[in-house]
Image (spheres, one colour):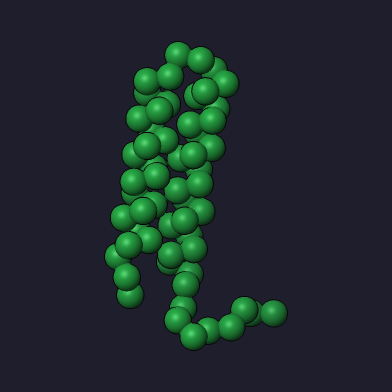
Length: 57
């Protein structure tokens, strides 16, 4: 199991939160929230990944 996806999710979350804290424009704040939300997608993909597995269809 690699630690890289977890570190990447944390980095994306920190970038989104930093942008949210420093933004003065509402539209830019919404964009930073979407970046922080994408970190949760990366984290969910990292948790659910299984090497050599197939899709549960």
